[in-house]
Image 1 (cartoon, rainbow, N blue to C red):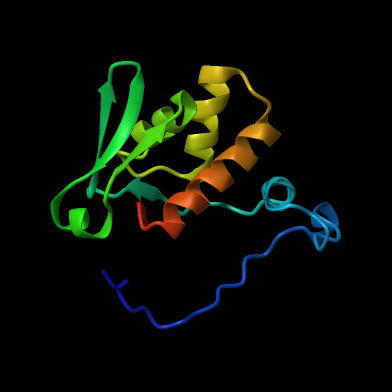
Image 2: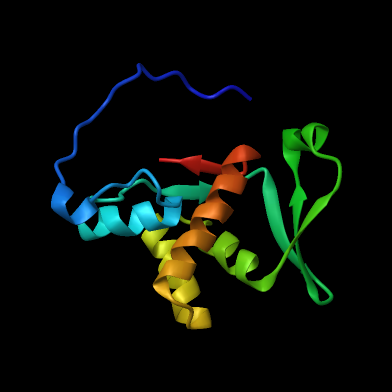
Length: 134
């Protein structure tokens, strides 16, 4: 399925660059943390694709392709517990911060770890058209 066309645009968001510093050598997670500290509002929301359903089968959490997507995907996806928690959170539109708070609250992990894990997970979902960006 092709994405809906939008005219390319850029938006300048003022942030305190003294807080940001040189971001060229930072990982995506480190850059996100610095941008948050500098006041950048991460407001995009993400929502799970309705082309996959989550089921708990025995002791496994799996995503099963449904509808027209069956022709594009032959198999199922097994989720570990933290991925299953994020997928469930994505059933409603969620920001990166919402997802990070899900992991931090349930697993007691450091914010930096949650940021990196959420960025990696959302990037993977986007690569496979499993999440919509709003």
